[in-house]
Amino acid sequence: MSISLRHFWLPLFGLLTFSPASFSAEPTAPETQSKSEDKRSEEKQSEQDSASEEAPHTESLLEKRIKEEVATAELPFVITPHNVNYILPVTYNTSPNMEPFVDRIAGGDAEVDEMEAKFQISFKFPLMYNIFGDNGHLFFAYTNQSYWQLYNKEISSPFRETNHSPELFMVFNNDWKLGPLTNSLIAVGVMHQSNGQSGELSRSWNRIYGSMVFDNGPFATAAKVWWRIPEDEKETPTSARGDDNPDILDYMGYFELTSVYGIDEHRVSMMLRNNLQKKNRGAVELTWSYPVIGNLRVYAQYFNGYGESLIDYNAHTNRFGIGVAINDIL
Figure 1 (cartoon, helix red, strand yellow):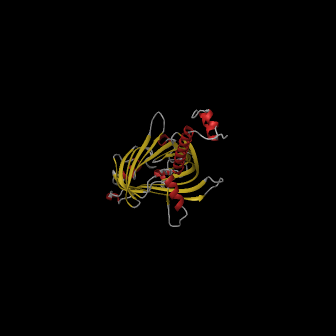
Figure 2 (figure 1 turned 90 degrees about the vertical axis):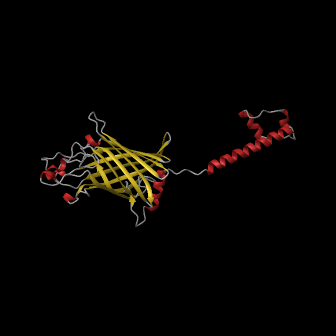
Figure 3 (figure 1 turned 180 degrees about the vertical axis):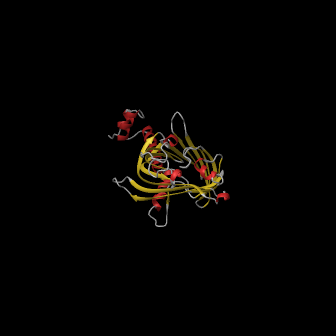
């Protein structure tokens, strides 16, 4: 007499019931049919499991960028982008900030034009990988953002403002889940930002920041918070030493949210910043890009709020610009 082990376990799940014929030496026709059905069911389940295991992982835009950066980071003739690298030959600011230049204007210089060019150069390179076992990667980055009065021939088309932002930061890979999102990256760093000017036009500050990046497929968002490193007060407004902009946090706040979404080859992004104070001030920046030739992308940018540049940190800016970029956030 033989007993099928498969038929012993299946009744425990309510799929089959025992009958006396189950213990016979030769299976009856119904039992043979039942075995055949069970076999087909097992084969179907095995096929489904195999298909599930072989289903390709859909690579998110963030994973794609990380993969491409790692593949080229050590190549000698490649510079890895940090933020977006772009040039906007034409931007229009509805209300240029004249306040920092009133003395020059009074001295006979022309006023600041509403139309100017704006560009940004941003790159990074790794210093050390896997500082803590198989995690913790140290980077240095530099970003240059310039505002050029290209069309202001009356004052010889000067650069109105240039911001220099070197930073040192460490990135940790992560896989925490928050609903449908994965917290893929955590970063901590220190940044210096200055406009390289002297006297009353000097603006600068230093901060320590932390950020977390969450992503899912074509969507990614980064939350960034910072703490400003305190500086001594200036003895006089023209002193070289001391805080150039003691109230900058009233305009820049303590955090920034940046999100990007990919639709086919389109990339749209939004940056939000707010001081969360009763006298509320903040900023929003919207961008769109689309590839046209190779890595070159048509790039449009709209900014409204405070802190677009250091010289304008306490002045409201409303600017639209269009040009080209060689990379986007993702």
